[in-house]
Length: 262
Ligand SMILES: Nc1ncnc2c1ncn2[C@@H]1O[C@H](COP(=O)(O)OP(=O)(O)OP(=O)(O)O)[C@@H](O)[C@H]1O
Image (cartoon, rainbow, N blue to C red; front, top):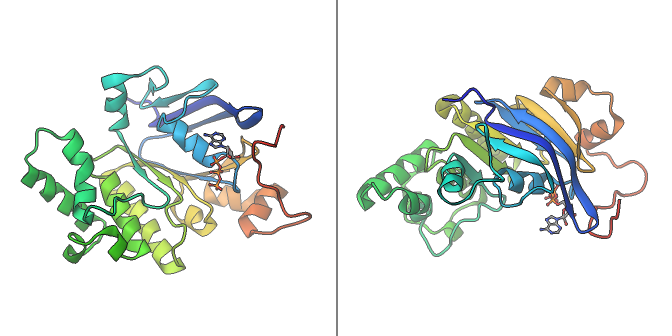
């Protein structure tokens, strides 16, 4: 086991055309901790997460997973590092043509050729139990279950290959406050029971305050503030306080797009 941080992002910069989306972003997520990235729409949160998954390559800077710089990896080395990470997508991104059980089993079928089909389905059932879903969900299609259940199936699928790192893209979006709290609780259990490291993108401040060891505020492509939930709550930064309270002062903020040449 290495003592490197689970995720290191160093001097990461990314532009699309003339639009600078990430500027010299640097942070380190120690093993077993939960970091939340907060920030308004269009501030580069998803782009940042895609770099950690190596779905995008940086213009400058490096992303290391467990000490390994992932930009330079390819083939088997890349898939070995990717297997350390599970991704929970914003809209759960489940296949409607499959049952929930098959959705969870999918990654195992692709990557665990050493297991029989029966063993794979047993692992998938165990993961569905772990996220608190009843047996009746197994044979349903994702279109037949609620949004909160879909999020759980998405988490079960992300943990199917027992990753060391979980990346969540807005896991509580679209859920009512009680369901949001139950997903937060589940994210906490993934840390407590499985010891996973989590990087969570969220707009949901109550969720960030509940689950984060550390919160990073992304603004204009830069980490404008970073700290424990308490430090973030107490921060004197007016923009951060405005974001936390959901206040709009002055003109309605414009979401940056490709016309933003800054
Ligand atoms: N592949 C791409 N090509 C060009 N522009 C892109 C691409 N991906 C993202 N962008 C732009 O980068 C900016 C940041 O996008 P990103 O999705 O990271 O925002 P975000 O902070 O996750 O916003 P939201 O909270 O609304 O999801 C946006 O202006 C977006 O249009």
